[in-house]
Length: 289
Image (cartoon, rainbow, N blue to C red; front, side, top):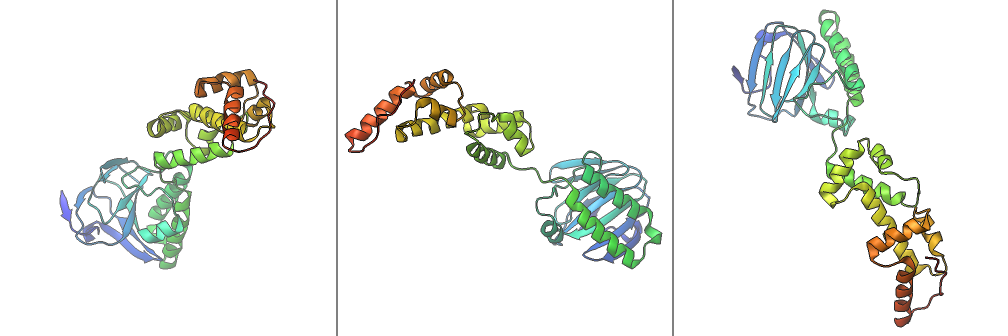
């Protein structure tokens, strides 16, 4: 396997190279090759490796992608990588990392991930790259610059970078707080708003908080109801229960007793008695449970 110290294809592999706009297009010949690159200086470049024919394997950052005809992958020029290609024509598009990130913050730039089959936007990008590869001899310098611009814009159609589970949980918790009073709120609604399955989000919450979404929603509703039992003495228990998503007062009472080891009415009396003992004032309230 050949060792190159900078992420530049040897001249023997190049059919054509064109600097175009912020990037550079490189058409590679059909001969098979294997390259192991260990960069010794930073370039700040990303490469899109696209295949029109044959197969390839890219390894970087602990990942390994198998590319087939019509697929592409990102490669980071400033980190070690291995690239192996069978016979077939391929295209490299080199772009500054900063240009891609500034134009499309949040886009998935993980390297050594095969793209162009499952995600609709990535299929569009793959199609553009294939067409550029096939039209090598027909494209002028101006055409190449326009093509790079089109691809750079189209990259925004690619998938988003995976969010950390912690970020998803934080967003889910914020959404739950906003919708606590909606009796129709379901854990599946929160997961759907995050673009993930309920099972995934339940697992992330269980890992970080020790409870599922349903249990967290129930606990937060009970806590909000308990707060109002002690601060809104003129509201009936059934009114407070309904306000926090409990349409059945008997069900609310059972859940409340299970969480606080007392009934809502007893909790309110104890809270009001404590307020009076501390010199506060408040109405008697209408206990109905």
